Amino acid sequence: MQKNMQNFRAVFISDVHLGSKDCQAGYLLSFLQQCQSPKIYLLGDIVDFWAMKKQVHWGEPANQLLKLLLEKAEQGVEVIYVPGNHDEAFRHYAGKNFGHIQVQLRASHTTLLGKKLLLVHGDEFDKDVNFGAMHAWLGDTLYDFLLFLNRWYNRARRITGGHYFSLAGYIKSKVPGAQQAIGRYRDAVVAKAKRAGFDGVVCGHIHHPEIRLQDGIIYCNDGDWIDNCTALTEQMDGTLALYQWTEQAAQIASLSLQSVPEQPKAA
Image (cartoon, rainbow, N blue to C red; front, side):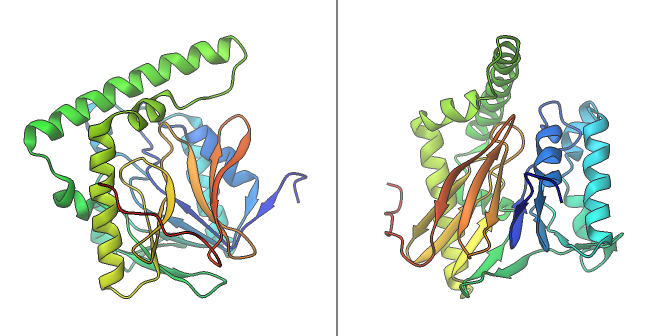
């Protein structure tokens, strides 16, 4: 076992966007090489077919990442793949296996503390966030620009010896319109989980890592591997935690399911 190996009960990953220009496959590869878990959930947009229709960016880290996931599945790790909108072609294979990786339209996971979590990608809730075609186009254009800034900002940081910093995520956190859209999305996801009788939900899609308790439902967004480089994990004691993994791993948020204050809905 590697010296710095970390053990989890489950790992939740989404929005890797393999094949896109800003994919941080190397960071995800490093994370998975240094952790052990009997369950890995891939919650959509693992491969970005949309981006690859324009231009393919597929380096050796992407090859190694896919090889590692297949090897883990072959070795007995339960790897469940819930496709998203950027890899929706895989939805046609729901109920089948790729190697030993199971493809499902949605999944569920029960924590050590008995909390049943609904697992989805999250694009089904786009209609609840929609501000109209113009706003959607403007949002995509601005996000592409943020990723451009993020890419060059971190190249400069590496040259000067600095560690990775999500400039795009920081800017998004300061934009009122973005926070309003995130709040609408969260409300829709929480409402769905509550109607379906779950204790919580794990999703991705909007590239905004977060853990909170809202309306009695545990809401977890595992973030992305474009600008945040985050994964959700269930610790060995049943605690859910968000990890940021770049040059150095750093736990950025955790939620004990035994005692946590309720947080209000976004305005």
